[in-house]
Image (cartoon, rainbow, N blue to C red; front, top):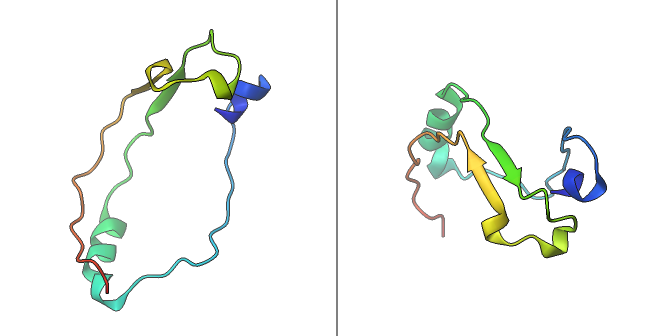
Length: 78
């Protein structure tokens, strides 16, 4: 959406996480996630008539080719 707003081609998105951690009780689920083969990325389509990110509504967005793995059930850490 940022590339759309700026009139640029889609590129990479780099970010950093300040407090990422994994609880020891979730190691089985982490191993399951890491063992999965990556799937093709979906495509986000934005209504080209909308020029500003502030004008885009949910119905202006479509996701094509989304084929996720099944959810990994994980107990809440308290």
